[in-house]
Figure (cartoon, rainbow, N blue to C red):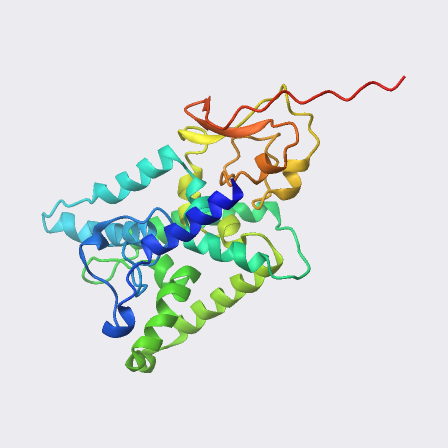
Length: 297
């Protein structure tokens, strides 16, 4: 299953970043596929991107909603919110473990040999603050004289956007370098910070700062596709604790909002207690009941 997941991650990357003519045109793709919502965090301004980022689109929607209402143009953009809701209701944070390009990038960084450290559990709540304030409240209420807001998270924070769009675009269009200022320097610093952190800790951006992951996490109890556990098989050995890239103790909290359904826990469970479910029905191959250890008299 791990091999399959890696293939899905690679294929997803090329599907959402499939426009490889950008070195010739030296700008971003603006074709018909750009109306498709990418399930994962994938910057609209990435020159190879064929889809748009749901977090970026949500900010643009909220940034312009007041001006639209004041001018009588009631285009609320339920397509963006609806698409995110459908994805969240169907698979939740499974997107993070199987599809998101920046999540895949962090996994590759973590494979670099180095001392490894845990992430303070309370930092997991930071991403909900970023979702509420930088993605929702600031674009909606911090408006200019014309009544429009800004995509605060994309403009001032998102390391994925810096990696996928900011740096490539100043390489493709050297004229842009004259306009670089403190904002770009700040975002490069944030990117470097998360790159270093991802080498020594597993998926730090996903666990602490991703507002899209925070949004999908809200569906952890109601999503259709999820991991399930058979407590008749589980002996609470803790093997699933050791391998989880998100720090989840799955046998203790199977509906944990941090679970990305990467199935690492299922792979190491010797008693086959963890498996994938759709609507509560198991879809993984049923394993034989594990043999009990003989009693020593």
